[in-house]
Image 1 (tube, one colour):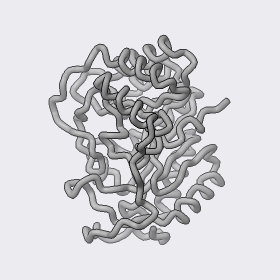
Image 2 (cartoon, rainbow, N blue to C red):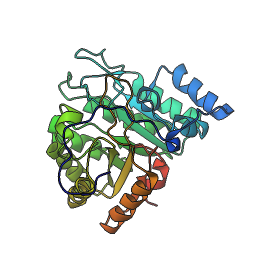
Image 3 (cartoon, rainbow, N blue to C red):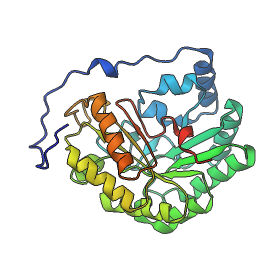
Amino acid sequence: MQQETAAPKARNVVRVRKPEWLKIRLGDNSTFTDTKQTIEGHGLNTICHSGRCPNQGECWSAGTATFMIGGAVCTRACRFCNTLSGKNPAALDPLEPLKVAQSIKKMELRHAVITSVDRDDLPDYGAQHWVETIEAIKRTTPEVTIEVLIPDFNGRLDLVDKIIACQPKIISHNLETIRRLTPEVRHVATYETSLSVLERIASSGIPAKTGIMLGLGETEDEVLELMDDARARGVSIMTIGQYLQPTRRHLPVVEYIHPKQFARLRTLGLEKGLRHIESGPLVRSSYHAERHVLD
């Protein structure tokens, strides 16, 4: 990662070799198999699978998963994301909230993480479906703590308020990348809209969490600026991980960031006042999510 303040030159599309520290293996124990069967048996989607998460083996082997609601097709086509995209996704499954809740109960989770595709095709961008899912989980497994990773609802803060009213333990919304790269990386979303969503969450008293990727051409100074922006809006939890190109159709990796740099950014972020930071090449939004819940 560059540490000077000057922005890097135009994106270099030369393919860089994946370093040894990014070599991973898929889980293979009985818990991994049971988790896989539970998810598939209920016809559910997970970001673990659709996002090609490098921690799928570790998390599924431990009996945890991040459920993705709203269907399998996203109405946005962000250039970093492997989730299927399309302008006319299928109608919402009214049974999905109950299916998610039943899966969480069967898996005996203590902390459940829920995320969703963007549903810009719906008048409320899927907000009511979110509410029904959270309520179903609370009815079925009231002892489970809930973390939600929400979309920006196209900047509709009244819809963010509907999620806040459900009182999950943590509400997360990802900035994904630094301000300069947002138009190229996120396509529809804007940096300022995401900051406004995070500020609304934090102002409610519920811990606000965000996540970013490195390796897209950002500088260290730009990452530190993002941390300052997030802290100014009340964010207290952050995840920082390496961007991994899902396919050749997606944005190329500009740089593989060394683990020592991830450790350095964690230290700097904590010094800036962030309460908890997961920072490492394989870290993703819900990695070790159960550790972020305040007692």
